[in-house]
Image 1 (cartoon, helix red, strand yellow):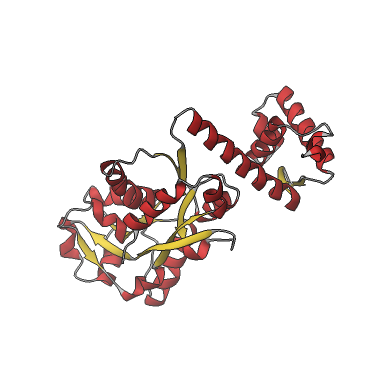
Image 2 (cartoon, helix red, strand yellow):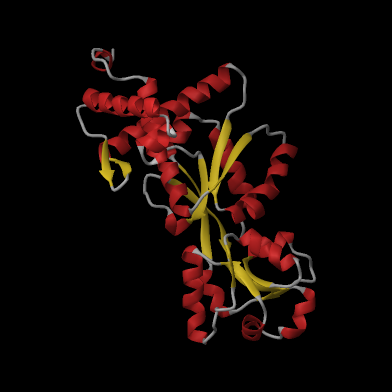
Length: 300
């Protein structure tokens, strides 16, 4: 059995791990971290893999080394195999497997973290590693099985090969701390007269500009942050209002004023919990974890 795989040299776990490392790092040099000996070793191992499979696995794109379609397919096979081996090792050694979940930091802080205590109360001893990632990276890493679970915009799921279920519709509003509320009788006046903090990058900010421009609102005075949690921290100082997703309300006192507007409706996003179907084939216990998050995170 499998004589085809073992009748030739060039295939090993170490070589397959090298494929993983180079793919993650984007180049052989970056994967080797400046070690010229290791750099030479990685280069040789990739060539040996290509010779073994009889196909090109990588290609140059500027300074980066990208996987070809064949290389990407092999990486997915490798990741699935390594997941199975890791799962087996955890089970026979009776050490808990650490599930890898990726999503944005605001989702981690305001959706995921609050429900984890419930898992403990229900007697679950799951362990997790959490990763703050963009939607595109979550989708890609799920496909490559670098992640077990992901929470992302439904319309950002890039492959039909991924399974997903909707869990929440996230809306946005302008939140105003107590002593600024006298200057904010309505949404438009608050937006033009108060110091505002919000996420100032990525697709969110592009969409925010698009929906507010028709109202003639100038965002030049906006305090652009790298994350929603930091925008919330600015609001909590009392000196800033903030445009935040409604899931942030969990950290806000009742005296913070919430100003809603139809202008922000186009920013509403549907979130889904997503996973690779192969996960359940190699790790059936993950189904209970998926059910837990669907049950605890779903918001009407």
